[in-house]
Image (cartoon, rainbow, N blue to C red):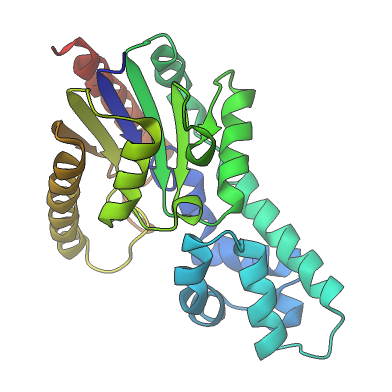
Length: 273
Protein backbone atom coordinates (compact mmCIF):
# COMPACT_ATOMS: atom_id res chain seq x y z
CA UNK A 1 0.00 0.00 0.00
CA UNK A 2 1.36 3.41 -0.98
CA UNK A 3 1.79 5.61 2.10
CA UNK A 4 4.14 8.30 0.76
CA UNK A 5 4.90 9.97 -2.54
CA UNK A 6 8.11 11.70 -3.57
CA UNK A 7 7.83 14.04 -6.55
CA UNK A 8 10.97 15.03 -8.45
CA UNK A 9 11.34 17.79 -11.00
CA UNK A 10 13.55 16.83 -13.95
CA UNK A 11 15.17 19.79 -15.72
CA UNK A 12 17.34 21.70 -13.26
CA UNK A 13 16.82 19.20 -10.45
CA UNK A 14 17.46 15.59 -11.44
CA UNK A 15 19.27 16.93 -14.51
CA UNK A 16 21.40 20.05 -13.97
CA UNK A 17 22.90 19.50 -17.43
CA UNK A 18 19.53 20.15 -19.06
CA UNK A 19 19.83 23.73 -17.82
CA UNK A 20 23.43 24.11 -18.89
CA UNK A 21 22.52 23.02 -22.41
CA UNK A 22 20.41 26.16 -22.78
CA UNK A 23 23.10 28.62 -21.71
CA UNK A 24 24.00 31.00 -24.52
CA UNK A 25 27.46 29.70 -25.40
CA UNK A 26 26.40 26.06 -25.31
CA UNK A 27 23.15 26.68 -27.15
CA UNK A 28 24.86 28.60 -29.95
CA UNK A 29 27.29 25.73 -30.43
CA UNK A 30 24.46 23.18 -30.53
CA UNK A 31 22.49 25.21 -33.05
CA UNK A 32 25.52 25.19 -35.30
CA UNK A 33 26.29 21.51 -34.74
CA UNK A 34 22.75 20.38 -35.47
CA UNK A 35 22.48 22.38 -38.69
CA UNK A 36 19.71 24.68 -37.42
CA UNK A 37 22.01 27.70 -37.57
CA UNK A 38 22.45 27.20 -41.31
CA UNK A 39 18.68 27.15 -41.66
CA UNK A 40 18.21 30.53 -39.97
CA UNK A 41 18.22 29.74 -36.24
CA UNK A 42 21.74 31.00 -35.61
CA UNK A 43 21.50 32.72 -32.21
CA UNK A 44 20.05 31.87 -28.79
CA UNK A 45 17.85 34.95 -29.02
CA UNK A 46 16.29 33.75 -32.27
CA UNK A 47 15.87 30.27 -30.86
CA UNK A 48 13.93 31.42 -27.80
CA UNK A 49 11.97 34.21 -29.47
CA UNK A 50 11.05 32.54 -32.75
CA UNK A 51 11.09 28.82 -31.98
CA UNK A 52 10.41 27.99 -28.33
CA UNK A 53 8.27 30.80 -26.95
CA UNK A 54 5.58 30.83 -29.67
CA UNK A 55 5.19 27.04 -29.59
CA UNK A 56 5.64 26.23 -25.91
CA UNK A 57 1.94 25.96 -25.03
CA UNK A 58 1.20 23.49 -27.82
CA UNK A 59 4.53 21.72 -27.62
CA UNK A 60 4.34 21.08 -23.88
CA UNK A 61 0.67 20.04 -23.66
CA UNK A 62 0.24 17.85 -26.76
CA UNK A 63 2.01 14.84 -28.23
CA UNK A 64 3.24 16.78 -31.29
CA UNK A 65 6.82 16.82 -30.00
CA UNK A 66 9.77 19.19 -29.74
CA UNK A 67 11.19 18.32 -33.15
CA UNK A 68 7.86 18.97 -34.83
CA UNK A 69 7.60 22.40 -33.22
CA UNK A 70 11.07 23.25 -34.51
CA UNK A 71 10.29 21.99 -38.02
CA UNK A 72 7.11 24.03 -38.33
CA UNK A 73 8.72 27.29 -37.25
CA UNK A 74 11.89 26.88 -39.31
CA UNK A 75 9.90 25.96 -42.39
CA UNK A 76 7.42 28.81 -42.02
CA UNK A 77 9.85 31.56 -41.01
CA UNK A 78 13.22 30.82 -42.57
CA UNK A 79 13.41 28.13 -45.23
CA UNK A 80 10.00 27.47 -46.83
CA UNK A 81 11.60 26.29 -50.10
CA UNK A 82 14.05 23.78 -48.61
CA UNK A 83 13.27 20.06 -48.69
CA UNK A 84 11.49 19.29 -45.43
CA UNK A 85 13.72 16.27 -44.86
CA UNK A 86 16.70 18.56 -44.31
CA UNK A 87 14.82 20.58 -41.70
CA UNK A 88 13.61 17.42 -39.97
CA UNK A 89 17.12 15.99 -39.86
CA UNK A 90 18.48 19.16 -38.22
CA UNK A 91 15.61 19.30 -35.73
CA UNK A 92 16.04 15.63 -34.84
CA UNK A 93 19.78 16.09 -34.28
CA UNK A 94 19.16 19.07 -32.02
CA UNK A 95 16.50 17.33 -29.91
CA UNK A 96 18.64 14.20 -29.63
CA UNK A 97 21.59 16.28 -28.43
CA UNK A 98 19.37 18.07 -25.93
CA UNK A 99 17.99 14.85 -24.48
CA UNK A 100 21.44 13.28 -24.37
CA UNK A 101 22.63 16.26 -22.34
CA UNK A 102 19.59 16.00 -20.06
CA UNK A 103 20.56 12.76 -18.34
CA UNK A 104 19.92 12.29 -14.64
CA UNK A 105 23.00 13.28 -12.66
CA UNK A 106 24.78 10.15 -11.46
CA UNK A 107 24.96 11.51 -7.91
CA UNK A 108 21.22 10.92 -7.62
CA UNK A 109 21.64 7.19 -8.31
CA UNK A 110 22.09 5.96 -4.71
CA UNK A 111 18.96 7.59 -3.34
CA UNK A 112 16.88 6.72 -6.40
CA UNK A 113 17.94 3.07 -6.16
CA UNK A 114 17.20 3.22 -2.43
CA UNK A 115 13.64 4.31 -3.22
CA UNK A 116 13.05 1.20 -5.34
CA UNK A 117 13.41 -0.80 -2.12
CA UNK A 118 10.53 1.02 -0.39
CA UNK A 119 7.24 -0.68 -1.33
CA UNK A 120 5.20 1.93 0.52
CA UNK A 121 6.70 4.81 -1.51
CA UNK A 122 5.85 5.91 -5.02
CA UNK A 123 8.20 8.20 -6.97
CA UNK A 124 6.75 10.55 -9.57
CA UNK A 125 9.04 12.43 -11.93
CA UNK A 126 6.83 15.35 -12.94
CA UNK A 127 7.96 17.63 -15.73
CA UNK A 128 6.63 20.32 -18.03
CA UNK A 129 8.13 19.08 -21.25
CA UNK A 130 7.74 17.88 -24.81
CA UNK A 131 6.49 14.45 -25.81
CA UNK A 132 9.97 13.06 -26.51
CA UNK A 133 10.92 13.45 -22.85
CA UNK A 134 8.79 10.57 -21.59
CA UNK A 135 10.42 7.74 -23.50
CA UNK A 136 13.84 9.22 -22.86
CA UNK A 137 13.31 9.34 -19.10
CA UNK A 138 11.86 5.84 -18.94
CA UNK A 139 14.81 4.50 -20.94
CA UNK A 140 17.37 6.41 -18.85
CA UNK A 141 15.91 5.13 -15.60
CA UNK A 142 15.94 1.62 -17.03
CA UNK A 143 19.64 1.95 -17.78
CA UNK A 144 20.11 2.82 -14.10
CA UNK A 145 18.30 -0.37 -13.13
CA UNK A 146 15.09 1.44 -12.20
CA UNK A 147 11.85 0.30 -13.78
CA UNK A 148 9.59 3.24 -14.60
CA UNK A 149 6.47 3.64 -16.70
CA UNK A 150 4.66 6.65 -18.18
CA UNK A 151 1.68 7.78 -16.14
CA UNK A 152 -0.48 7.25 -19.22
CA UNK A 153 0.31 3.51 -18.99
CA UNK A 154 -0.09 3.27 -15.21
CA UNK A 155 -3.84 2.76 -14.80
CA UNK A 156 -4.53 -0.40 -12.81
CA UNK A 157 -0.87 -0.90 -11.89
CA UNK A 158 1.23 -0.16 -8.80
CA UNK A 159 4.52 1.14 -10.19
CA UNK A 160 7.27 2.39 -7.91
CA UNK A 161 8.48 4.98 -10.45
CA UNK A 162 6.20 6.99 -12.74
CA UNK A 163 7.07 9.60 -15.36
CA UNK A 164 4.42 12.30 -15.74
CA UNK A 165 5.00 14.83 -18.53
CA UNK A 166 2.74 17.76 -19.31
CA UNK A 167 2.76 16.68 -22.96
CA UNK A 168 1.17 13.36 -22.01
CA UNK A 169 -1.21 14.71 -19.39
CA UNK A 170 -2.30 17.74 -21.42
CA UNK A 171 -1.74 20.25 -18.60
CA UNK A 172 1.16 21.92 -16.82
CA UNK A 173 2.35 21.23 -13.29
CA UNK A 174 1.05 24.59 -12.09
CA UNK A 175 -2.48 23.55 -13.07
CA UNK A 176 -4.80 21.44 -10.95
CA UNK A 177 -5.79 19.07 -13.81
CA UNK A 178 -2.18 17.81 -14.03
CA UNK A 179 -2.25 16.49 -10.46
CA UNK A 180 -5.86 15.35 -10.61
CA UNK A 181 -4.94 13.19 -13.60
CA UNK A 182 -2.10 11.63 -11.61
CA UNK A 183 -4.29 11.05 -8.56
CA UNK A 184 -7.09 9.44 -10.55
CA UNK A 185 -4.87 7.36 -12.85
CA UNK A 186 -2.75 6.02 -10.00
CA UNK A 187 -5.70 5.79 -7.60
CA UNK A 188 -3.86 7.75 -4.95
CA UNK A 189 -6.45 8.23 -2.24
CA UNK A 190 -5.03 6.75 0.94
CA UNK A 191 -1.46 7.96 1.38
CA UNK A 192 -0.33 10.38 4.10
CA UNK A 193 2.66 12.43 3.01
CA UNK A 194 4.19 14.07 -0.06
CA UNK A 195 7.74 15.34 -0.52
CA UNK A 196 8.42 17.62 -3.47
CA UNK A 197 12.00 18.09 -4.72
CA UNK A 198 11.92 20.93 -7.24
CA UNK A 199 13.82 24.05 -8.31
CA UNK A 200 10.54 25.96 -8.77
CA UNK A 201 11.94 27.54 -11.92
CA UNK A 202 14.94 29.20 -10.29
CA UNK A 203 17.75 27.24 -11.90
CA UNK A 204 16.49 28.02 -15.40
CA UNK A 205 15.58 31.66 -14.81
CA UNK A 206 17.54 34.79 -15.61
CA UNK A 207 17.61 38.21 -14.06
CA UNK A 208 17.98 39.34 -10.47
CA UNK A 209 18.78 36.55 -8.05
CA UNK A 210 16.96 38.11 -5.09
CA UNK A 211 13.85 38.75 -7.14
CA UNK A 212 13.83 35.23 -8.48
CA UNK A 213 14.19 33.78 -5.00
CA UNK A 214 11.09 35.68 -3.94
CA UNK A 215 9.26 34.16 -6.91
CA UNK A 216 10.51 30.74 -5.86
CA UNK A 217 8.91 31.16 -2.45
CA UNK A 218 5.65 32.18 -4.08
CA UNK A 219 5.74 29.20 -6.47
CA UNK A 220 6.64 26.84 -3.65
CA UNK A 221 3.75 28.03 -1.52
CA UNK A 222 1.30 27.80 -4.41
CA UNK A 223 2.48 24.31 -5.36
CA UNK A 224 2.28 23.00 -1.80
CA UNK A 225 -1.25 24.36 -1.48
CA UNK A 226 -2.21 22.82 -4.83
CA UNK A 227 -0.83 19.38 -3.96
CA UNK A 228 -2.40 19.43 -0.50
CA UNK A 229 -5.74 20.33 -2.01
CA UNK A 230 -5.62 17.63 -4.68
CA UNK A 231 -4.18 14.80 -2.60
CA UNK A 232 -5.48 15.69 0.87
CA UNK A 233 -2.09 14.87 2.39
CA UNK A 234 0.67 16.67 4.27
CA UNK A 235 3.08 18.23 1.76
CA UNK A 236 6.68 19.34 2.34
CA UNK A 237 9.18 20.69 -0.17
CA UNK A 238 12.93 20.71 -0.68
CA UNK A 239 13.83 23.66 -2.96
CA UNK A 240 16.66 22.44 -5.18
CA UNK A 241 18.29 25.81 -5.84
CA UNK A 242 21.85 25.41 -7.02
CA UNK A 243 22.37 28.61 -9.00
CA UNK A 244 22.26 30.04 -12.48
CA UNK A 245 24.71 31.00 -15.17
CA UNK A 246 27.21 33.49 -13.77
CA UNK A 247 26.41 32.71 -10.13
CA UNK A 248 29.52 31.83 -8.11
CA UNK A 249 27.71 28.87 -6.52
CA UNK A 250 26.97 27.26 -9.86
CA UNK A 251 29.61 24.58 -9.91
CA UNK A 252 29.87 20.83 -9.65
CA UNK A 253 30.78 20.77 -5.96
CA UNK A 254 27.87 23.01 -4.97
CA UNK A 255 25.48 20.91 -7.01
CA UNK A 256 26.84 17.70 -5.49
CA UNK A 257 26.48 19.10 -1.99
CA UNK A 258 22.87 20.00 -2.72
CA UNK A 259 22.12 16.51 -4.02
CA UNK A 260 23.61 15.12 -0.81
CA UNK A 261 21.40 17.39 1.32
CA UNK A 262 18.33 16.45 -0.72
CA UNK A 263 19.18 12.77 -0.24
CA UNK A 264 19.39 13.32 3.52
CA UNK A 265 16.01 15.03 3.48
CA UNK A 266 14.55 12.09 1.58
CA UNK A 267 15.91 9.65 4.15
CA UNK A 268 14.38 11.76 6.93
CA UNK A 269 11.07 11.83 5.04
CA UNK A 270 11.07 8.04 4.78
CA UNK A 271 11.48 7.71 8.55
CA UNK A 272 8.52 9.97 9.42
CA UNK A 273 5.26 8.39 10.47
